[in-house]
Length: 171
Image 1 (spheres, helix red, strand yellow):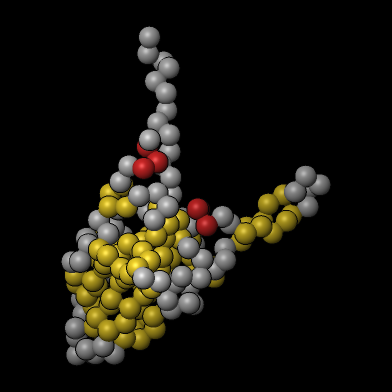
Image 2 (cartoon, rainbow, N blue to C red):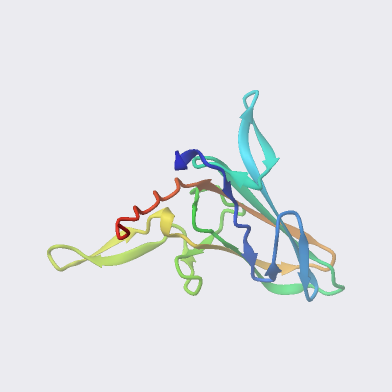
């Protein structure tokens, strides 16, 4: 029963401000507008509807538009999109495709993420990190010219809710 309940989407925190659905915030000369859309199929084509709630299995596309409202270029701009608990990044859905990811918000590497683990024989083996462990996506946006804007986007699937723990300690 829990798997079919709607889940409120946790909207992302970006490097330049805290955002809520459809609201633009600014810090310095860069403003960011974040929107979340549920991706559905309609007459054989993708359709996008604003997403404030979603059910397990549904796909959400986050779009963040960065706009330079200043009179000078902004250099070394980085767009960072957290992947909230309950969502899993869908591979190859990011635009631009040049993407970094992190499991801790501190260390970013090119996608797909990999880690070294000790095998049963004691040798180090390189394994891909499961997408369910990705917690942040980041795009190096370079320089954003005065009055220019740029958008990043990524899709995520809503994961099934964890079953509620039984309350076996109470008698």
